[in-house]
Length: 323
Image 1 (cartoon, rainbow, N blue to C red):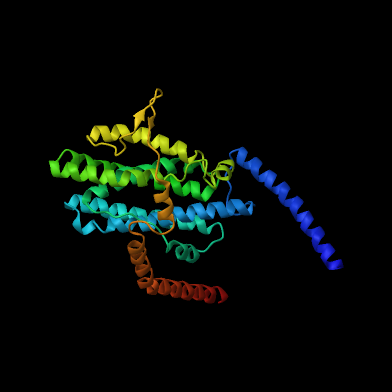
Image 2 (cartoon, one colour; image 1 turned 30 degrees about the horizontal axis):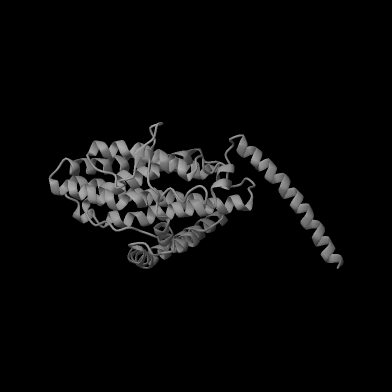
């Protein structure tokens, strides 16, 4: 009982200490200071960032698969070279983000294990590659530019380079769509079909509506996020509708209208589809994740060889230091 009493007192003191630290932490956030890996942070802040950054990294890695599938089928050498560069960029983005997540105390191996249960949509035609660049990467830019001012330093710094490269991807995608929409009737129909299939999934990329979002309040309080899901979604729609009009394509939303303030008001999103994808029942979940698992398993020897080389090099350095 005596020991239990001591433990209770210690726990109470820790609670008071953590409350004081939390207040100091929030004061730093409110003062727009960056939080670095060695700084004290609440456990919930660490968990929130680990979840967000790791999911972001997963999306970059899995996102290579539908585009990589088209490298050998790109319609010209120029398109092939550009697509190769884009896939390489996406791989690099995943690595930057995994490195940022590792600073929060979770190993890359754990993060990759978590990745091997994801979501994906099919790329049926070359126009899908254009739409992915124009809309998917465009939505990513809308989401990610505010992250350059995220309160966590490693994440914010990684996003600066990611956003620069994503802007290239978005322009590349728009150029593909422009070429198709200025081409034959068949090519324009292909572009419209891709837009029809991708429009609603892209709007879902911004996350659930604010009224049901589980993480928005705390993420905003800690300045991980600067804008809500619905705010970013509306900004994206307002920016994209004029682009579609320029291309001569029709947004697949007959109920869309413009309000007095110039905002494009879109119809209700089918959040049941969103929930199904998150539950692992998306159009290409099983196929795409099977490919990702296969690649991970077949690459095991590379990781083992790299680890063995690192261990051997460390032993050599220790031996030299001891001489």
